Image: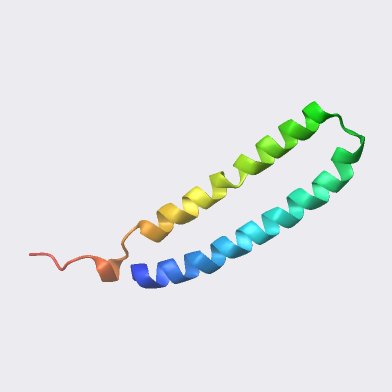
Length: 75
């Protein structure tokens, strides 16, 4: 698969991942945070704000890896 297609697929996958992640974090926050104190609220948002980077990192690495179509022919 060419990098052009990988990037196109990756952009839509990234949007989907962030959308689903935001829904999950929001629904979890509605259940946990109303009764929690300010320290728990801070920790929740600190972890939730950073945790989305882990799965997205692998997606971005995949998007930047050249496919067979992008590699030059052997000499």
